[in-house]
Image (tube, rainbow over all chains, first blue to last red; front, side, top):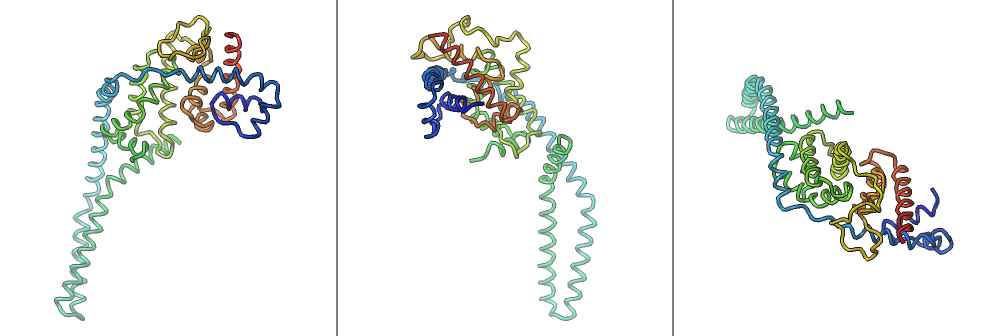
Length: 157
Length: 170
């Protein structure tokens, strides 16, 4: 396409012309002749202001979308519930293992430290393990969503 | 302010408030786009159906993309499907009835609805998105699923057609 087309398109879109384009309009017979016509077209286009949407339109959209949204909520909770159920299966084993580790740690510390201090350290360690476990389970819903999105991206390129 | 993309994630999870916010933000631009692109036919139906498609496809929305691009893409695709009904385009601008939605033009011989109706659909989409919605060539190309050069050439073709009509109506 020629520079004339670019200059005239810029005029049509109502964008300001740079110095080079203005110089081009002055020097080019075609652009000088067409610029006022393009101005008329742009002016006419500017008058097209469609009526605003009716006041009930937004509510109608929400009403129509409600069943779809309800279904999406249900599907999401079902996925989260399935993931939580699956992740709860090994929980008793993890808790037993953690309890055994804490007990062993307390016994080992009690050999070299006073009983109160070893209990305090073992309690702190147990609290840390509990926190990590809570964070892991809290992340399950987020992971479910990411996984669902990842699966969609894989299947849709 | 929550981004449109974050709101779409919430819509995908079934959040009605997120949809309400999103509809509020895009009500006017989408409605105006449809009115200009279709010439005012079935705008409310198309508007409602566009949002329904947005909600149904919400879990397929890629949050790395711009929501506006996706929304206009859906609206354009829907309008194309809608046009399987008797299509009014392109029409002879001289035979079109006076547009009810057009404000009185200082240039009585030209009116915007006639001008837009005279353009083939592909060119009209470019003019509406570039002129009225101030979108860049790149975003329009993404919406229409064509190269950037095609957007440019369609705008030039539209310009040639519109100026020819303007000259003829003098």
